[in-house]
Structure formats: C-alpha cells, structure tokens
Image 1 (cartoon, rainbow, N blue to C red):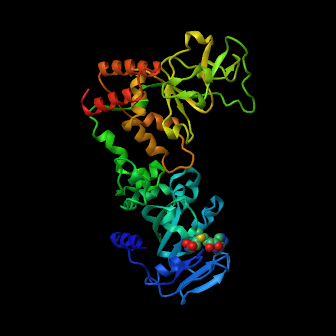
Image 2 (cartoon, rainbow, N blue to C red):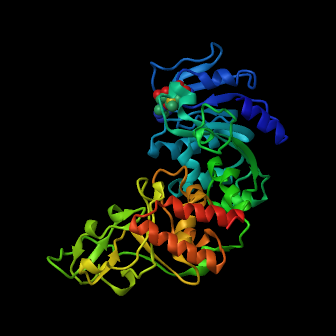
Image 3 (spheres, rainbow, N blue to C red):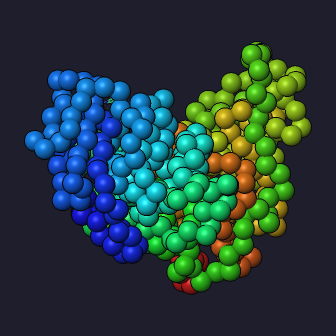
Length: 424
Ligand SMILES: C[S@@+](CC[C@H](N)C(=O)[O-])C[C@H]1O[C@@H](n2cnc3c(N)ncnc32)[C@H](O)[C@@H]1O
C-alpha cells in the first residue's frame, strides 16, 4: 500500500471521497491497509470461515463478482488466481470503481505478460489508466497460500472508456519496478542482476504487449549497450525460417535400416550440435519430409518453445549428415525452427544467441510467461552484433572444435565476449 500511495502521489492523483471495497476480502488484510483512505469499508467473501476484517467494516458472505450497484473510491484486493476466474475479477475490480477511483490489485505476473490474457488486459486498459506495476513474489503474500509470481498494480478508473486500446498511447508513462529487496527477488540473486525502477511509455507497453516489469529490466539492454560492434536486426540475415510439418494426426513412418531421413527434435539438440544417433529415422514421404524442412549445413535449429530447451538456451547448428550415418538427409520436426542464414557466419550467430548479448534478448522475451516461446517475428527482431570477417572465421573454427568435443561451448562464448567488448 505504501507503493500505491506514493505512486498515486507521484502521478498527481487524489483519491476521491467514498467507500473502499475488497470483493474477495478473506481475512480483510487489504481493507485494514486502506483504513486511512476511506471512511467506509466493504468486504465480501464467498467463504464464511475466512471472512474477517476491520471492526468498522461492512462484511458479508456472498459472490464478490456480483455488481452491488455501488461505485467505490478504492477497490483493493488479491482475487483468486485460477485462470478462468482472473478475467471476471479484473472486470469486477475495475467496474466497481467510480470515475477517478483507484484500483489496487495483486494479480499473477502472467496476466501482465501473456497473450492469452490480452483481452481482459486491454479491456482494463480501456477502462482504467495503469499507474504502476510492481513485481513481487507469492511468498510476500504468504497468507494467500500461493507461490506464483505476482504483480501489484495501481490503476485509476477513467471518466469514459477509451474507444480503442491504441489510445492508451496518450496516457502518462507507467512506473515499472521490482523492489530493491535482495532476498525476495530471484533476479537480484542472479549474477550481475539488480532490482530496478523504470518509467515506460505507454506506446512501448502497448506495442510490446507486455505490462510485466521484468520485461523492462534495464539489465536486458546492458550487454548490447556496451557492445562496440555494429548491430543489425537478425532478420536482415535470415534467408529462410520454418518449422517442421505438423502432421495433423499423422505420424512419420519409421524407416528401417540405412537411408531415410533423420527427424530432428528437441531431444536431439546438444551444446555440441545434433546427435544423429538420437534422431528417429523416418521414411522419405510427405508431409514430414519436404525440401523446406530439410536442414542444410550451417542451418540453426531453434526450439520453438519449452522451458527445458528454449528456456535453457538449448539451440544449436546442423552441420550435415555425418559420413558414417548413411541417411539421405535430416528434417526438423514441428517443435523446432530451421533458421537458414546468409551473409553472416551462423557459428557466430549461434555463439551470440548462446552468450549474454543474444541470450538476454531471448530471456527478455520469454521471461514471465508460463510457456516460453519465440515467434518468427521475435527471432527476426533480435539485435545481432556483426564482427569482422576474421572474427566470423574464428567463430567457425571454434564451433568446429566444440563439435568435435575438443573444446567446450565456452570457447565460442569467449570469442563473442571479446569481440563485443572490442578485445578481439
Ligand atoms: C487469494 S484470497 C485473498 C484473501 C485475502 N485478501 C488474503 O490475502 O488472505 C481470495 C479470496 O477470494 C475468495 N473468493 C473466491 N471466489 C469468490 C467470489 N466469487 N466472491 C467472493 N469471494 C471469493 C476466497 O474465499 C478467498 O478468501
């Protein structure tokens, strides 16, 4: 609540006179917090066993989603986090506020980050102005019994709804922060990380479709801002990008004996390349085997989604069918992208994407969402430092050593770090 009060003050907003509501108040912890803000307090909860609150509060057992017809100066609380319940609760919190009224609500971080919640998020943005979003951890709210990552957000109900969410561009910037509490925040515990507070323009928030503070951590920009190399969008070097056949109920037929195609999936990716022995061998037939899914030497294989692969930075490069493998070729499956590059060493690009300057851009995109994934558009938009031809040749040489097992991947990473810092 201290954040809410100071953020409203910084935004020059005065809380109007009127009552305060928590539509899912439980033991009334939030009503207690806004006692100094509102004359009358109203608390509703479905569960009579948990319903408590300040002695002066009007408490009732009931469905907090039901509109009681009243409009409140402050609507506060942490609604239940079930996916299907969040949307209705957000609408209730915002609708219950009077014009100029304040909504202070704790929601799952994913609600601010995911495309799945874009509809209610946009609805909320049309009806209320977002003042601040503060990432906190579930354990800061132990009584809720949740360990999910959450964000505390402060909103002001608009006098009139915006006709389109694009109009939020006219709103003042939103304060995004993670409190500077070393112990409570995972990022603060990570090497080189720190808590932060930034103001982000609403146009930027809308275009990125991301309202979670983690996405705007200045940390993500650091490796690139300190990079001495010219930087180009990776899309300028992308010749082709495609994922494998979906199959739609049909599975690839196994191929017995020599020949056939290697079916490259996420389980076959390692730091030192793709392990042919782990790839199922499939019959050369559509839809799985087609020219466009066929890997060419130098193509990158990028997992489309998944915490254990994309989330662990497990992308790699294909370098051709080994001579002793006796396969006609290799194709990607539908969970992996084949990224074909031209005009740049793909060993260099692989090195960058698996070192801070590239990986942190990917982390920024996938952070805070339950199921990390990377779209073609996001891959093309990645900023790629471009070194001299000599450094690119060195990247190819080092990747060959990584593949042969004579050097760890770190060897290629060191080249990236040196070249980006001007030392190579
Ligand atoms: C996450 S808890 C928050 C309670 C309290 N603020 C706390 O921190 O302990 C959510 C509360 O919502 C209540 N609840 C769930 N569905 C409800 C509904 N439709 N109407 C009112 N309360 C509801 C639950 O009983 C629970 O007490």
